[in-house]
Image (tube, rainbow, N blue to C red):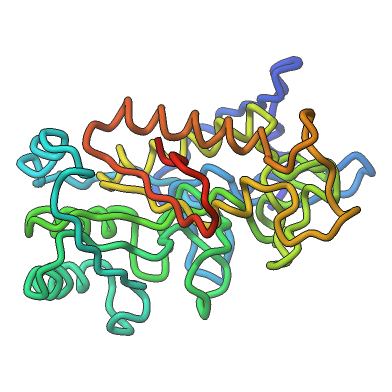
Length: 307
C-alpha cells in the first residue's frame, strides 16, 4: 500500500482530515497511513470501521448494510413499558463458544428457541465488537464499531438480533468504554502521540490489564464513545448496554498505590471526567432510544451510576 497515492487533507485546526477516493466499492480493504512526529510511518485500522477483516488480519473494510429489519413489532413496543418495571431475566452468552463453530446466522437458528425455552427474557452477549485475541471473551476491543468478523458480517449479526427479537427475546451487549489494548495497528498512540489515551502515563496505563485507559476529559474521545453507544442501539437494535469495568473508570486510585495517582481538583479520588462521560452517555442513550436500558458492572457502591 502506498499512502502517497491518496494523501488526506487537514481541515485547519479541527483535527479532522478528509479524503475522497473515487471508485471505491463495498468490500474494499483500507487503512490509514500516518506520519508520526518523528517522521516514521504507521499503518492504522479505521477506529470507526463498520467491518473488519477476520483476525489476525487487521484491515478495515468498506461496508454497506443490506439487511431489512423484521422486528417492527418488538421495536414499537420496546419503549411502552420501562425495562426497569418489567420482568428481566438474563442469559449471558459468549457467542463464539456457546456452540463452537456456529456463525451468526446459524446461531439465529438455535439460540432464540433455546433461550425462550429456558424462560429468559433477554440474552446478554459478551462483547461482540472486534478484538484481536479469539481465545479471550472479547473485553479488549480494537474495532468499537464493528461486530467481530469471526462469525460473519455486520448484516449477519443484524440477522441474529432480528431473530432474537422476533422470538420475543431482548438483546443486551457488554460494552467496553474503559480501556483498549496496545496493538500497534489500532488505537494506541494513534498518531504517534497519546490521542485516545490520557497524556499522563499514570492515568493512561491500566494497572491490571496491560491496556490503556481512555482520556474521558477530551471531548473528541467522549464523542467517539457516546456515539458508539448510540450506534449499537440504533444500527443493530441493541436493547441494553452492560457497561464493563465501571469501577476502574470512576476511581483515580483504582488498583493504584499512594503516589501512583493524582487527586482531582477537589482533592478526591473520583475521576470527574469519567463521571461526566457516563452522565452524557446515559442521557444521550436514553433520550435517543426509548426503552433501551444501561447496566453497570459496578463492584463498588456508587448509587445512581446508570441514571
